[in-house]
Image (cartoon, rainbow, N blue to C red; front, side, top):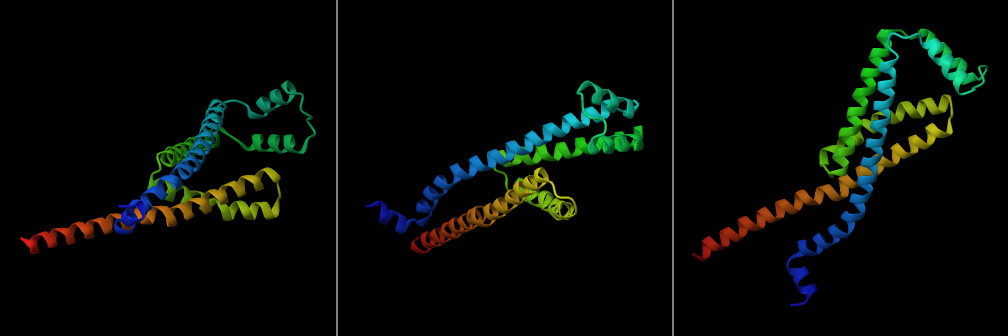
Length: 196
């Protein structure tokens, strides 16, 4: 029997070989996305530790020490904004910020590990969480444009679009394939009973 005849008789064999070719590339993309999420989670852990370390300290004095250590222009717009924000912070707000940062980092770790392991729930989690931030980020970019934020928004939008495409095209055939094999097994069992 030729390979074409076998694939005509057993069509899921041909689909399985196509899935292997697609799945290597798709798994590589999912691993890259998962690695990005884990990297982002690590950055948030560092920020959370830094915010937790600043609880109980004079934030304005800490910002002033950083400005002097790094020779940053005190009259810079962003430094002035940082001083204004530091003056409004107290220990309770810093505690909440650090806890929220740790929570987001845990979410990013879960998303990243789930994507690396190619879990269906992780794809949905990334789609739902990331897509929920896109409208707010777009609105913020409309009011105050920034190249870095626009690039990050584009990356997140591409993540969502790719994962939705992945869920629609790759995850659905697995279910139908399982259902077909169950139906084929049931029909085969019925044929055996009829013959017996």
